[in-house]
Amino acid sequence: KHFVYLTPFGSAPTGKNAPQEYITYSYDAIANDLQKITRLYGERISSKVLYLIEDYIKTIRVEITMNDELNDIALKIYRAHKDTLDFIFENRPDSTTVLYPIFEDVVTSLGYVPGSKNKGYFRFTTPELDQLLPKTTEGWPDREQFLFEFDYYWGNNSKNLSFKAVIAPGNDDIANAILDAVQQFEKFKKPSGKKWRVFFSEKEKFDSEQAFHEDPEVVREQIEKILLKLKPHIDRVSKLIVDAGINSLRS
Image 1: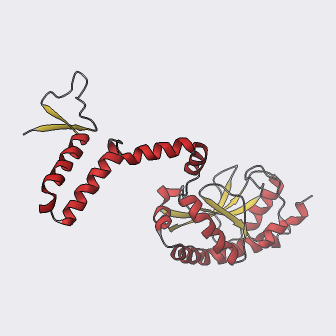
Image 2 (image 1 turned 45 degrees about the vertical axis):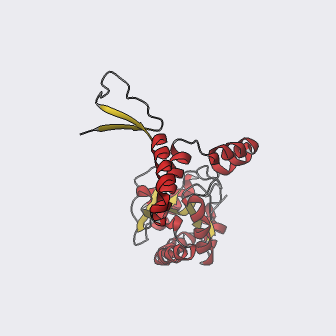
């Protein structure tokens, strides 16, 4: 048996417990040796195999040893446009930014009103509740007292879509009036929290990381199917709150 200690540039193992029987070898040497092979025997190697070897050499030099001319070009571009590139990198698209407008499109198409924004969440309410309930809390950016919420990123390692009906901390009279009104809701569950009170929640299968790579129209159909399933519950909760006459507490 021959043990090889492989590093980008052939560094030796360090530390008092470092194995002495290892042969040091480098990715840099692999790239150079493969380059020699392609020069000497390139005509005898099939085009497919030759392409794979050359692609591997390029990967080593760009990604591991970083001594390819592309790295030099990239460094020059970065130095010339550092502020712009830093901004682009910090705001590069991910599943939270790509999926949000799809949720917004589906929710508004069904007549609902978008609420406060936070990364990985889509919140909304009904037109009736938007007109009825005052915005006096400190819980969400737009100070809403009550919202329906999709957590499409943070819940359960992004594999599930979590839906909640949430009463925010703020005006205790209005919060308690909402809670009293929705106790007639068939799926009402007594909230466990004292500050953020969730009286209804459900989970649906939804992989946000996979959806990030899907056709947006396919994702839209998936979200719409989930929302249509929840729509009777949303409308029922909204009606209960409106019928309770909570507007009398606005003052």
